[in-house]
Length: 154
Ligand code: FES
Image 1 (cartoon, protein in one colour):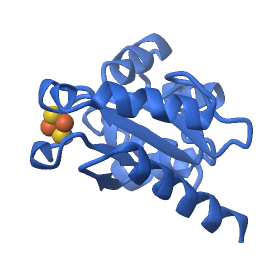
Image 2 (cartoon, helix red, strand yellow):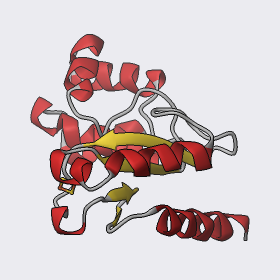
Image 3 (tube, protein in one colour):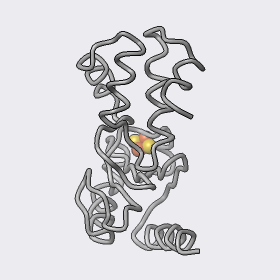
Image 4 (spheres, protein in one colour):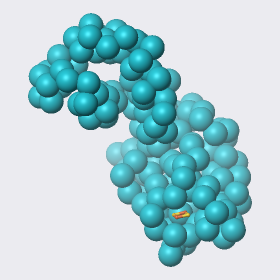
């Protein structure tokens, strides 16, 4: 779908901006909203570019820089933190060879921190794209990454 088509799907009223940004980002193969799309959005919706960026940057789910096909979000809210979220984060950084906000060389993964995912009962937790994983430890992380890599190599 083009940006124009996405806008016409929701209507060009400002109240639809977040949903439109969501769809634009989702259809980008690198999971971000690029400069060209923002310019077009600004023209079509009559909203200043700075305003669009300011609104989107309030939410952690939007990105203006390219990201991996799989976005790993590790919960860093207190319940997960107490149960070892930092260890999970460190392990992921080591296994992926990237720091927070970076993208792996193969373009597959981006690592981010996030606030509570709503599954505190299975802390520490993370989300990869739309899927939530809980009761994490290094071994489980290894398996999850392996499964994704295997799927991608087919
Ligand atoms: S604090 Fe991590 S899922 Fe709620």
